[in-house]
Image (cartoon, rainbow, N blue to C red; front, side):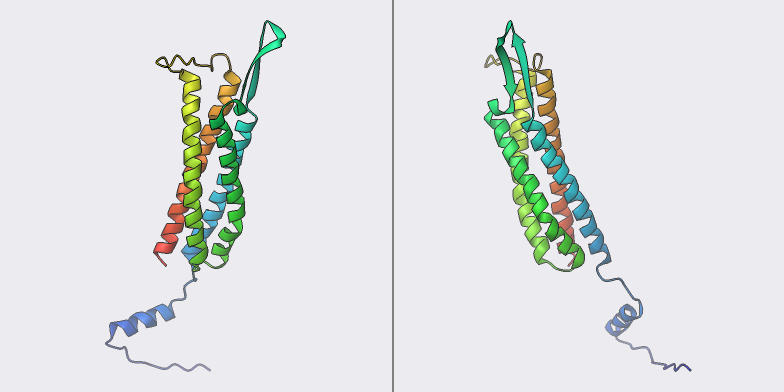
Length: 196
């Protein structure tokens, strides 16, 4: 047995709007959960690229023999302070991204919580700046290694140290992938906060 109650439609548009919202069931936080899932996946990608950049640069080393085994030329990342800064900074970025994963999970569980998203935006911006600065400085050194500088009489070393240059170039490219992903993370979190 069912009971149907007829209710006259109200002339107030706000009442009709609220009644329509009640009548149509919606999944709470559906699109925000989608953003949270994308945030988590992008963080995993940024972890891989930042730690990959750090490890690739830290293992870049090439030795060229010259006449005898006792007299050799060596190119290593620790010969350049810029590359040392790059290794440390990208390791910090990767470490932060690993530590930020629980906060990303919280935004998935509680999609309407603004605190974790705001916290992530602030720290993502700080580490975006760090990743950009170390990537740009390393890119300048890689450019000098490939092309040299005639005005300063700096010779290009990549003709002799091809493997070293290939590894450092790959590390720089990987760092800029991490920069782009961090930028996307900031944009996603901003969109989620902006429509709160």
